[in-house]
Image (cartoon, rainbow, N blue to C red; front, side):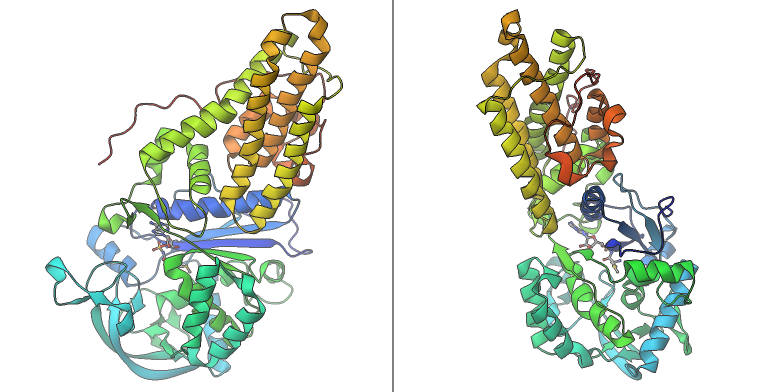
Length: 530
Ligand code: MSP
């Protein structure tokens, strides 16, 4: 994907959000879709705050695991990542020329600064994690691996690897990182992740090997072409190389880097927290670059209590869920049902139940009855409201306070609370409609002005909800926006500001209201769980 048209390279610093770059040795799975969705919701929300935003995702194409999968299965590493309607600004591959050249430049710089040296290394290595393990990281195997040490993430035995390679002097940075995190407690989130990182740093850091001679895929070290950069020390750099690290002064790429780096939020799964909150900032310090503002470690999606993963056959492809529920319901569910930062279980039953109660019977029902009633009672023209009563005042107030609370929750990446706030407005209005009974008011012309007020209230709240939910469900909210005839008077939905969402009276009377397709149609029969 390319840069947004007309966006200036210079000027204000962008709110820069990244996802991990995903291994391409397997089909993209739900864990990837989860992080990508979170980043997308976050960046859309910030765009609607009127901020300049840069959202990066991509793929990790180097390393042993990828190489073996390619050799074994003919899977090429150049597979396009399937997304969930992500409006990313850029997509990086670690085989991109821009990345390769800048990784070499970076390590050259770290070496010049005196933090790289040569030494032999031997240790247990997990191919699944692409990582040398410390003895304390391993667990005893069971079943066919009884008597062997296995990786706790992959439940497979580790391999013993010995080679001469280059070391990064990680040990030099423990104190500086502790100091940094003590001064910036928000730099690792949630709190449990922060505590883990600080405790790990306080044990002291040992130097770590940053190159390999045993693989032939990877980025050659500029000063030793018998070695390639170890995949993690190549991959982490994508966040900086993608936006132009190391570019010549005066070029567009240098300007891009100056207005994106440091990143505001690195979104990662908790299993790769240490790479992002220890190794990565140490690398940046070694090269003299500023540190990212925050690393946010989300939890794992579980099925039957186990981490969903292709290698353990508990992987459910995101497209299986999206085919059934639609991409917006997918985005809604994973942001709403699981508190970001915690583990969460997925089940078809839970997702179906929420789809029906929160989306179809909640927002979907409010939209269909509002548009239908304006059609039936006012020929599809939004009426001018009369004076508001206490019932409407309560709605207006809730809308304003929900907007403020949702906005504050988004600062904490607390998607679930933000969605809950918006949902509380929908609930209140559905309740309001049941109480005021517009269908009864419609029976007597003496109530015409009162009915106008009620119909206006219903549609005006939907206008605000479309603005607030746009980051979460962009397709469905675009449909609601058009059913409300809002585009003509107010312009594109994505251009609507969060701060103005709760302002009452934005949707002009006279707007053409059309009852369109159901926002959340009845679900097809459920796929059988296997
Ligand atoms: N290539 C590295 C990341 C390099 S970033 C510089 C990598 N790739 S991965 O494809 O194995 O995993 C990418 C992300 O998916 C990780 O953040 C991981 O936590 C996440 N998930 C994988 N399975 C997951 C779940 N079951 N649930 C949630 N996220 C999970 O690691």
